Image (tube, rainbow, N blue to C red):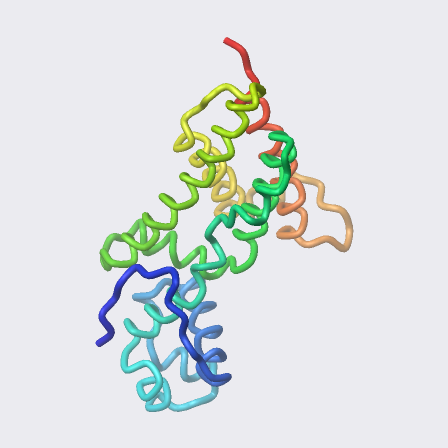
Length: 215
């Protein structure tokens, strides 16, 4: 069995067949949950035999581990995406755009991470998700502090700001069937595309309002 270490920098070389298996497993884990998905389910969907999955990944647990390690890097806020903006408001806006883009880069993986963090059955994955949140909260803190130093933001707890961001995203994502009854999605646009656009605008507005509000 692999020795799981929350290492964001881990670079894994995966061949096309492994990537195909990972993509299928990811969709099934997100849809049905890890425990309710069997190796046979994955093999049938991939039209391969169980032995091939065992050959490449040894076990379903190791497949989940590789899947998470391979994909989680995309969810980290990367300051290089927005720190070139000298104006604090523009930097905040670019950070929000980057944040939303990262969440939509792989919705299946995000569902798996959320499930694993909430289930607490495999503590190592919950630890990895916590490390990801800690990283993103620190990047958010840097944006807030920059605006405070420029004299345009008031300091506000980055943990609460991050909770607002992630909570809003999850509320829409987890309640898709309900939300679709209340929102008017333009013809030809998917729920996910609509959500990405509107969520980005909404979070920009909310964070700007919080950071510029005077008591």
